[in-house]
Image 1 (cartoon, rainbow, N blue to C red):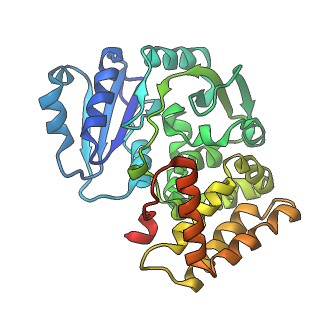
Image 2 (image 1 turned 30 degrees about the vertical axis):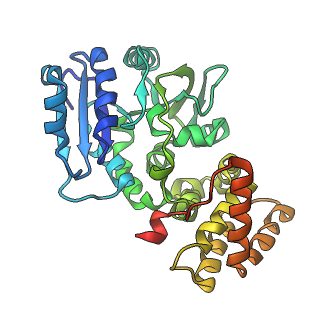
Image 3 (image 1 turned 180 degrees about the horizontal axis):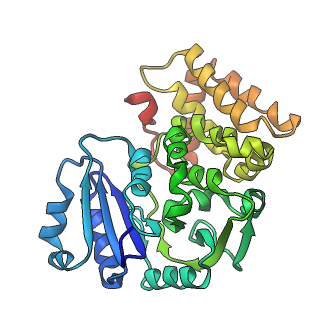
Length: 336
């Protein structure tokens, strides 16, 4: 551990220099001798260290470390790397397109000082504004306390006590497929004495992703619910409880149509494969839901037998609600 540094702010990034420059520019005035800035570049086309040194001269005055991966290891793996390379007691993983508010670092320090026994802090955000702060104890208490799962997924509003979670880093790597490795490491690390804190305060402004920078909807849906199979979750009989907490993030009817349209679109369409992927996604997503909800997947499944009909319908609905022409849905999982 660094002798004096209390907090590492780790920014995983890839090919987004404009976002990164803006992020670091806002962050720079808040940094002091107790903070280390860690930039993990996922093998961008340009070397981000050179880019920042050229555009932000003052960056040379702060405690900063650059790590550039030899190859692109994927966005989720790059997030887990933040834990691996953190050498301070606390870690804040900050998305390169999320802007810290003016007193974000001070707020984090205040929480750390007031609650030194807390292993994990989840702050409010535009995704979910919490009316009041509260604490939870143990794994069951943490799952019970989840008030908005999507806010938990938002990496930039989470702060970790690294010595208490780093031992379970292997689970974060193992469950990268869940697209929620930053939550996996917490779920696997909590014991009956561990404390977590859900704060009503905000430390970051959410940089809502543009349509061309969305994650793979298919890949995310396939792996999303795999965290209910975590050893700690299964051991404590919390799979159903966690799955029902996660249903806050379940797809709307509009998203269901989008998923079907994605599986039906493009030259790679294959009826059998599309139905297989759809069945996998729906089984995992609705397994713990009541029967009357589980059977709703069958009408949507039937639509995959008629890809041209669903695409025509989706085009019509898209134009009706947005007045924009439908364009082919690109999905990383299907196109790469």
